[in-house]
Image 1 (cartoon, one colour):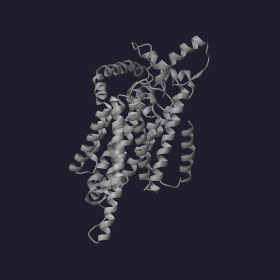
Image 2: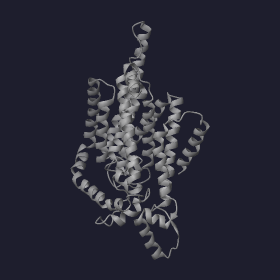
Image 3: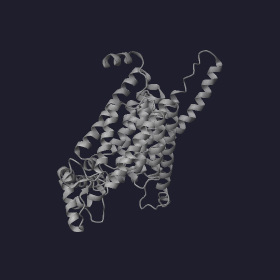
Image 4: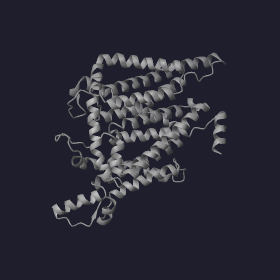
Length: 444
């Protein structure tokens, strides 16, 4: 709450001071976000009981039973089953929006700051990875001051699937910075003088060291994702790898060399740490998948009874014991282990359709724009390379959302929004050559 307050007051005030600057995002793309925030806030506001009975009969019936048992005579209730918790979520999402706008504005005003942001992401990811690998080797190390009951890499995050989701947001950016550093090695014209040739050699040494550090960070993060034992995280990691292989501006030979280096790193250190642990984890995926399916099926009545208004952000935790029948009594399911299903339950089907449709449209358009940038020759720009990696990282997050609840960790949301800002910055790169003229004619 303190961090969100600082974002709202500090970055929000900073944006207001620059109110004359152009908005970093078109209103047609900002409007769905504002509508969703307004709807989630409305779920938390007290409404007359007859109106709630009309909009959400199941919610009104629950409150009627509560009033009967407790002697409650209130005339106003909320659509959300946890009004205060839902409003807290709305404030968090508002802070994310303010953060995105502030970061976009800063990246516009100071383009070199993009490398600083990417470097911080790589540094944080490498630190989390190193800590997680130590935890796997010595489980008694725990998560900060908390003990853990299982041998897995978790870093500073209690839930290993959220930890894997965080690393899958960080390592693509580190990989992009390594590619950008390698691309700068041969930027010096060596045909004119021996002095420039010496400059290239010095540049070669400096950029090689920088690229090597970034690649080392990538290797550690990939290794940590493996030994987080998060099956969803590992699958998402493979999706990100495949996406990067298709989109990063590298020759086929270079991609094979980089892939060989990473595979050798992962294979060598993986065997030392015990890859059999990872294999055994996947051997139990059938039972885990069946458990997930049972949770999904048991959650469908929540969607059916609250399809229009939802139950309110953060309310799945409260209602799951009521609806999830046949589950072990000693286990409390605070999340649906599927972000798409949980948002459909909490927001209602119309709002969830708006949310997911907006995300899909943004990603499709971003992918098309990146494709045009690559074909135009702008793909070797550092901003475009980092934006391409951010695009791949976001795809991994969306894939991981089908099996876990990594989006519920505020840190993951802030890093995902950071990647979205880096991607949006890359999409502003000017097209060059014939592709730019063709695109302009097509737009006209």
